[in-house]
Amino acid sequence: MDFDDQLRRYFATTDLSDVPQGALEAGIEKMQVDLGMEADRGRRFALWALLSMLGAAPDLDVAFKDPADRDTARDFMEMMERAQDGEG
Image (cartoon, rainbow, N blue to C red; front, top):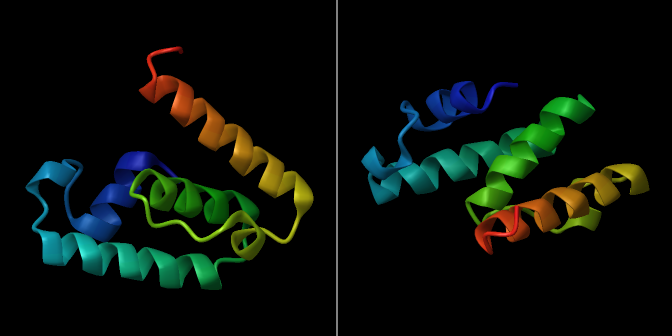
């Protein structure tokens, strides 16, 4: 699942600064519903990762049944934190 494709699917643009608050909230809500229904691990992780970047991801134990998937999500969160801190 391509990042730009996800943005276009849920927000009709690749530039989130163009999205009005109500449309942003509606897109996030649709993503959360889709996450709950998605069975494919890769697509599920991609949805969760974007929700995480938007500050709207569910807790890891809710989002991922598999411990390996939770570990991958933790690695992603740490990587994003380092990137925000300018470490990497």
